[in-house]
Length: 64
Image 1 (cartoon, rainbow, N blue to C red):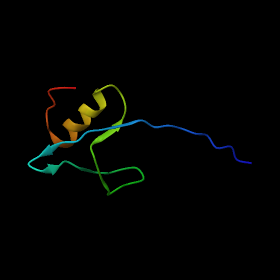
Image 2 (cartoon, helix red, strand yellow):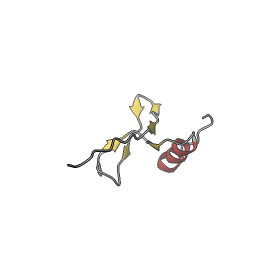
Image 3 (tube, helix red, strand yellow):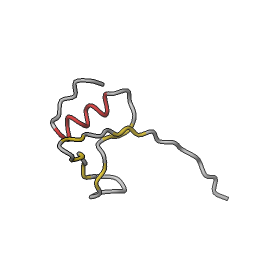
């Protein structure tokens, strides 16, 4: 009998809306390559989401 292990993954996502448009990123790895998603990733207090926004958009966040 195979024992199943429950795991939990906490993700953090951000929404940028400008001129009635929502910012999306195209997945480049993982199970959803080529699909669109909100910018985000694994949780770590503020730094991960900030780094992802800056990398993906060149938008500078002034709060967090």
